[in-house]
Image (tube, rainbow, N blue to C red; front, side, top):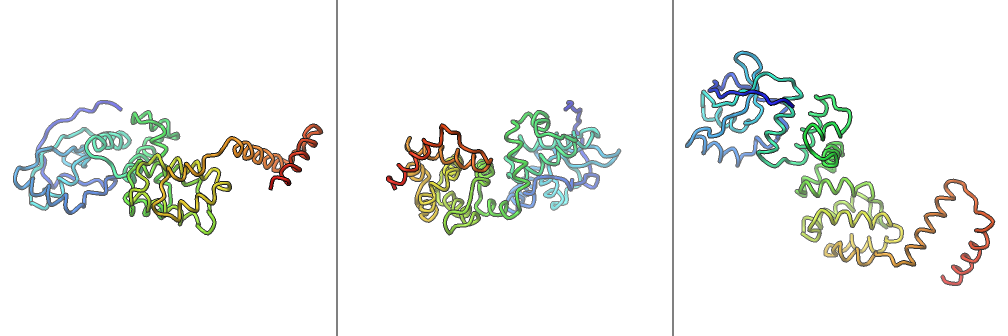
Length: 288
């Protein structure tokens, strides 16, 4: 991204246009607008708007939509602006993202939408290209874009429980591992996990990873998983302590997975393995 030239200019409000593609959706926040409007009325606009020239006497807002709306409400006729020369759409999207990223924390879905738009406008085919362009890690980019692709039901649910971005990102990793546990369907399980976050029983987003590891062995851990989900006060640490495999249990699990894999692939046992499996079968029948 090239370093664009800009100049300071007082511009009539009538020549400034809002950007319909603005990713921030909090500009209509009533409480914030009231406070900002009172400040502008008393002191004026302390921080100029950032605008991009569209034509000789038309400008599009890059940063400062709330200041613009407050000034409009107050009947302000001229606004102080930093004016950037006309630029390609992709550079505008990228530059706007950087301005807003350094000014105020993003809501997770707003950030996801902003990244998706930059990727689309710049014509990037891979997340790695977008990550390099914005100097972000590829993992953060992938997690944010995946959030946008989730069903609106889950997004609405995450916003309902006011999950922070770190929890949303970890939920993206956890969700594919969640499966039915006894009488509890996946959607019910997700709600119960979110309730634990809301009530501070789950206190860090990294605990979602521990839950995911338990779900990877859901068949063996079904009883303890069900207890964890039914008891609103049971912590992840308690669940973890109850589901740590002993060395013997781990060996049984590995052998079970190996046998299932062979059956699925249609593989047969060797002559050397037949007597060993017969001995194992006899021992298991005596043991249980």
